[in-house]
Length: 357
Image (cartoon, rainbow, N blue to C red; front, top):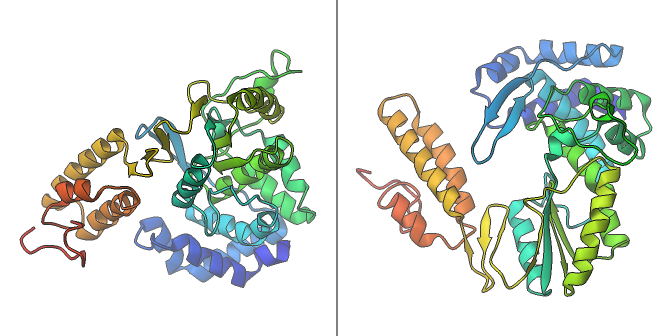
């Protein structure tokens, strides 16, 4: 397994995947300019077991919620892509169907469709979120989970190096059964949000929980996207009992349910899930906060474009991402009002910019 990760042609393919959509960034461009030299160095360090993760660039963002985003150096991202290309398929075969984050053929929009599928067939839903999920991931538990499928010692060394190289995350000082006063400070935890490897590790960490919900609780409906999940049943008493059992199970993984984001509700009620407001009649809307944030960003992009500090390509790329997301909701009138007579106005079927816009 390790040879499939560390060989030169695998690193070339990994570098190409890591560079997609980022070739003009200075760090990426510099790496690609001397691609062979950089990859030969990485290959040599991997085979000699001298490779170590570099320093992260940290950005604390507050939109849409406070969180710490960490960007690994591009050479590290190449290694992450090389690892995931080989190791992820080994776990993918065991993942349940209704886990939708960071998997080929899945994603938020398919998760929302699945949520609606179960909503229309059951009377009640338990909506839940894990409290500070990425900062709370316990390193020892994660390593043990990886060892249940991976037997190659050199591959495990590399996976451990990435986990151990995680930068400090937000503190999560929670106590679980059996802890003493110092346990929360003695156990290493937290994975950087933004790493491809962290997204894969997150699915591995909750894979056991997914199977427990489906095979032990035998939930008739279950959808998970990262740490946001929904469990469906016709009897609210059953769901309330399951909430207690879920709390105990997650406690064994040193995780806790978010007290403000875990609740029981009838499926006939309006619900917000993965960036959409879902109405019982099948319609979808965007949350008002989402629309407000986009309008603010759009004004900022427009001002930067007029002052020459943002290129047309940058504006198109950032606006197109929101417009593509909005098209999955009933937002024709909203998009027409925002983009009237200009780029992305749905009234213009070919999507081309309108003259003079």
